[in-house]
Every structure is written in C-alpha cells, then in structure tokens.
Length: 196
Image 1 (cartoon, rainbow, N blue to C red):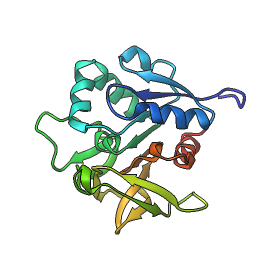
Image 2: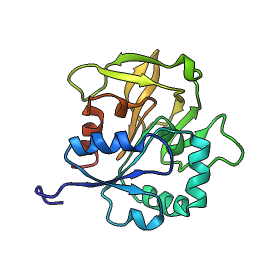
Image 3: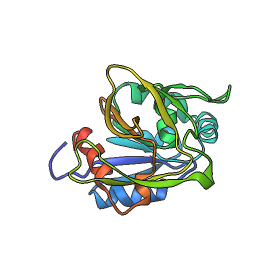
Image 4: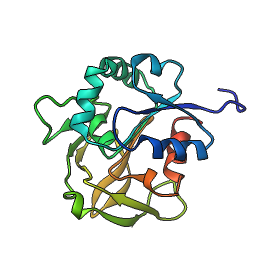
C-alpha cells in the first residue's frame, strides 16, 4: 500500500459498539466502512469485530451470509482487531459457548464468556501493554477471559495474571473496550501490526 493511501478498515456493524470503533479508527487516519453483508468485505485492508453479545453476533453472521466468507478471509490473513465479543468470535475454543455458537478459530486461545462478572460488576483499570509507552485505561464490561493459549500467541497485557490483550500474526484481541476511551493507542497498535 502506498504511503499516501489511508487503510480501509471494515467494522462489523451487525450489533454492538461499532460506531465508537469507527471514530477511533478515523482518528488514527483510517477510512472505515460498515460490514453487514459479504459484498462489504471487498477491498478491505483490515477488519474490527466490536463488543456486543457474542452468541447474537454469531447468529447474525450466519443469517447475513457473512460467516463463511469472513472465516475464509480471516484464515487467509485479513488483519483483524477483536474487542470483548470480538475476542470470543476469533477464539479457537469457547469454553462456555452455546451449542449453536460459532467462532472463526483464528487465534489459538480458549476463552470463557463473561468471566469477569455481570454488567453490574464492570470495572476500569490501568494496564501495561507491550508496545505502548504508558498504561492504558481499560474498561471491562461482561468481559471474556483467556483461559489458555497456544505457543504462537503473544500476550501483550495481563490483568490478575490472565491475558487480556493477545496477538497471533495480524490478529489482535482485547478482553475490554478500548473504543470507550479517548485513547486510540490500541487501535494504532493494531494498525501497526497489520502493516499500516
């Protein structure tokens, strides 16, 4: 990609906090596009899977016809950033998933949904993230927890010893919601790992 071209980053817009991701990506210099149908994937340089309700998002991905097409592109190397529910959708194993819940299996991690508690147990904390110059203020809302990870997975941040930001190739995931802060450094870090 030429230095003068802004990366085109799709944001899955079936459900969840996609508008906040679009704002963060725009502040990082990316052009954004809603992804709701398979045709919306054409010409993308990268993709964001936002937070939301992972089992609902899984159903909508299947009913929209997006799941199989997107799975193929992700396994072919389309850079992706998943937050909260997006982490669950990208995991190889959902330990407490519903029987009809699908995941893309892009990252060699096993996750547990809502592992940090219910909505009223949401919390915020400062995290040291590899690649960032100062702590990142993380907002955890019904967040998943990484219970195990394979040797190809790089842990970029932990909370209470559990991985909360991990990377494998050009896929980056976070248990929390970086889009709910004014800090775009995690989005910038993702774009850097994606080659932009």
